[in-house]
Length: 276
Image (cartoon, rainbow, N blue to C red; front, top):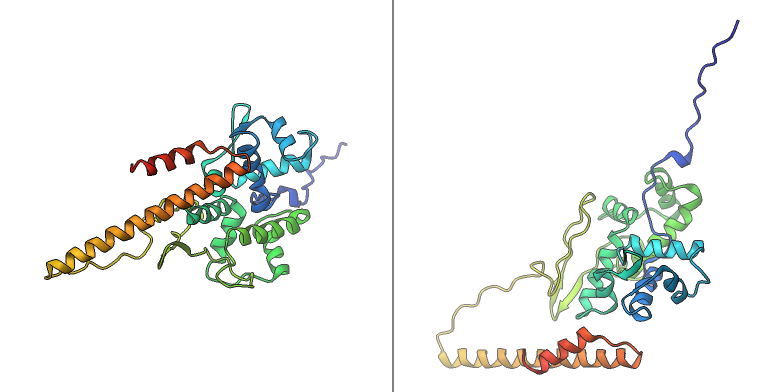
């Protein structure tokens, strides 16, 4: 008599777990990809050209594929047809108008990595576990495969350092703290809270409404005093514009010396010189 064979339940394996995505290269290493597209490719290039720009012999290279994949995970590279382009986020990092814009963009790129965003949200305001504990959390809590835990931990720490998350506690890599961004003299822009399901939200330009507002000033009863204040404010604004123009010119000269022709920057300088 035939004996009915009962189905054998296979033990769960690490491969069946849902692993949070993370880049295989750090943020600093990944920035090399849009930089190569921006500098050597003139803004766009094919995959074959990109491999050459980055020093690889061809596109059938695991390290090359991982590096391009990391740049896309950070939101630094996008594909249009058969061409790869640097994203606006990458342009802000590589060629910012103001220094704080690049710092904000680095924070945004860090949060684009799902694993990094989750770790920040889960340990916000708390000390990170020691290395062995963080690696156990990556394996047990975030589903990272055991063979990739060391890589995930290293890339997390290196990327957090690049994005300024350890700057608040100098010399210590114990807390993931979104850095305070200096927008201007005496003004700090704090980042908006990041929801785990919606991703980061950052204000552009001069920091939006995140910085402290100045209390309204009572009108002066002395007309001469008001005129003096107005003159001083006008002079201060002129000085700021002149300093800004000088900074742009120096940036344009530096890029030109490196063989880069930034037409947008040149147009911005011309508009300022024409008083626009």
